Length: 66
Image 1 (cartoon, rainbow, N blue to C red):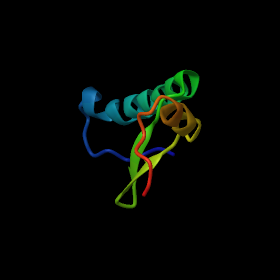
Image 2 (cartoon, rainbow, N blue to C red; image 1 turned 120 degrees about the vertical axis):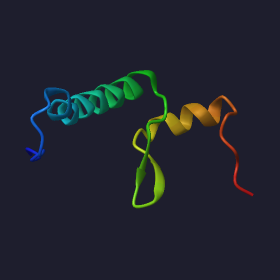
Image 3 (cartoon, rainbow, N blue to C red; image 1 turned 30 degrees about the horizontal axis):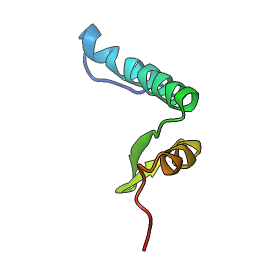
Image 4 (cartoon, helix red, strand yellow; image 1 turned 135 degrees about the horizontal axis):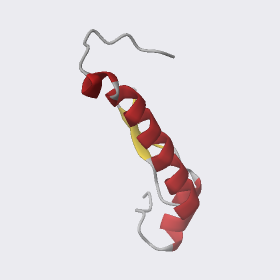
């Protein structure tokens, strides 16, 4: 998907693809290290790396529900 950006500044036009590359890299790194990847979706915080939950729970870092 190409976004139309109304500027000729190369820093601005190259920023969207750079942010997408950074997001892909962050997702890969979170999967490799089994760490949470938290993003905001529809006003809620969502973990995109569900395998990280079991690791956090084992290490006692996640709160238990009452």
